Length: 208
Image (cartoon, rainbow, N blue to C red; front, side, top):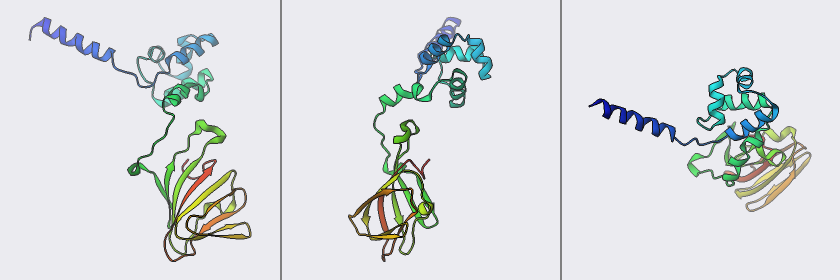
């Protein structure tokens, strides 16, 4: 390989790196807030514990910051995270959870399979949804002390009972129920087969 060929290859590599797409662009917002507050790059870098060069590259959207770096910069500049992520959220207005990618968790022998993922940016409107599977003779536990918010559920298979304070509501396949979650409540499977229900809770309690 001749020197000219080698230099050409290096230039092509540099050009490719220079054109690499930065997926999340926070630079303009960080720079505008920094300038509005009258902070220099050096001041922000020192307070954030990073190099001045890194802050400059982030502001010019040359690199995407690690999440801990972004959170530190937001803290130094006193920036609301909703403001930083609002453009990204507008580009992804629909949340899709593929069947094979659902998160699950268990409380003893009761299984919860996530349908809708909580989003902190939704604030007081945040919710979670999941499929509950309760074996015969078992019940949920976490709501037995009550919590803030509301719950809504639909029985899709089997039958059960909602124990709400000192009241009991019989629920059969196809029945739905909604209630304030502040009172103690549990869902019991009093049938002979598995109980499956789709449940919605706000604010989120399990998948947070």
